[in-house]
Image 1: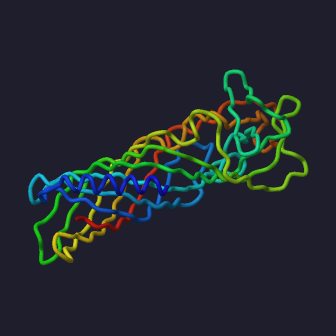
Image 2 (image 1 turned 45 degrees about the vertical axis):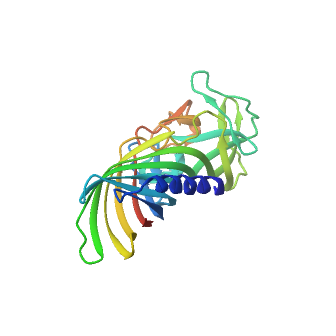
Image 3 (image 1 turned 120 degrees about the vertical axis):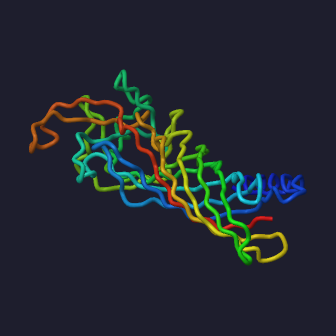
Length: 293
């Protein structure tokens, strides 16, 4: 993270050195974020509101005194929780969710062959709650509409796209120890609720989508507290339009029982498939404080 922040600072200073007129403004920005996924399936449910933190470089290019383009590069750390399988009681999911693992590596599940690659049958987890921990590089591109100076302040609104690129992900998984026996995934009889921290899939897709995009609208104010330097604060809502989590999982197995309603899950015959959670856009509320030079 230190290397990335150094790169952002160097890029910002280089850009600022080329900006000889005040059509350009550039500076540092940071602040908290709050996120929640729009769930459109009964297979999972949202567990509370996720949180995050962003830091990076923000800047403006002004076409005239009142209209400009706002952009930058931000480094985002985000987390949120999702309930799976038997733990998602409010939406009555149809099955239970399992995966195979080796140490902190989550193994690939092949939906066509119904095989977890490299599975040690004793190393299986029944997943009930997952805390996603994602790292993103975010590039916001907004049109900015601002007032003329009113005393030492100017006020503005922004509208545009907030696009994030996944650079890393880890999971803190809660659930039960299980095994693969008799052709089915079965919770260990003596299993107690357990936590496995910093798990990561070995698959190409890491549980979170590589790119996500949201439409954002922001409002804020800039305070000219000295010379050409401005301190600003803004808040905005970003409406997610692309999935935040991988729609069809490459490692989670959804095992469904055909037992009649009201019967014990274990009494039925089972079918298995890769967990499909459909489109699940993530909405983000963001508050930022920054400096512009």
